[in-house]
Amino acid sequence: MLTFKLATTALAAFAVFGLAAGNAAANATVGQPAPAFTATDASGKSVSLADFKGKHVVLEWVNPGCPFVVKHYKSDNMQGTQKEATAKGVVWLAVSSTAPDASDYKKPADLAKWMQGQKAAVTATLMDDDGKVGRAYGARTTPHMYIVDPAGTLVYAGGIDDKPSSNPADIPGARNHVKAALAETLAGKAVTQANTRPYGCSVKYSSL
Image (cartoon, rainbow, N blue to C red; front, side, top):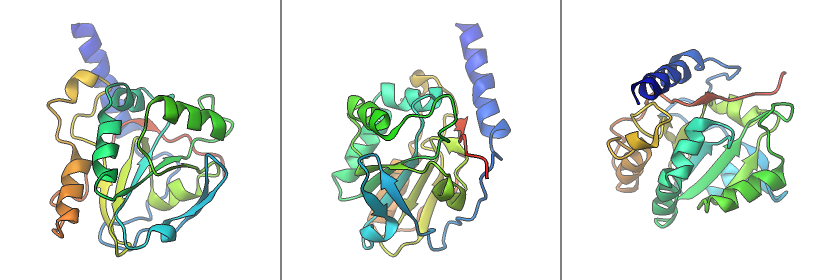
């Protein structure tokens, strides 16, 4: 048990600090307009951020091959957060910026099947194979979370919670940053913790 805990802690530290740079260019800034984008979802439909003007939008970077993503899906923590948000009229977009030549890349149909199998409550799953959306937001990890308000302003960027590990046992004691930020912005308040540290596996961007 101690060995596992130490290994998990080391993995988390590597995810938080060692994978922060990647190939992402951090262009998105909390308090500023969220970068506009158009991408194709897993069913082949074109989806734009502008489609959801006037609504709160959550962006979730996802990669089923990442143990940190598995942590939040296997425990139903991510789905629970999604369901709570969408029940309040929030749009939830999952984004895959994994390069097609990466070993854990999933084709659109396969990613859609995985999301369905997880009973994800997302509005759409976007395929960002060329990494343009991810780079525009500076997405570094899976998961990496963002919230856009109805005016199109980025009001949150960071991790899903404050327990940077791949151990599901850490979830009950964690502060869910996304739930907290959504509660505040939906109430018309400023987000108290608008920038937090993302953690997870590095986004496997395609080469430019």
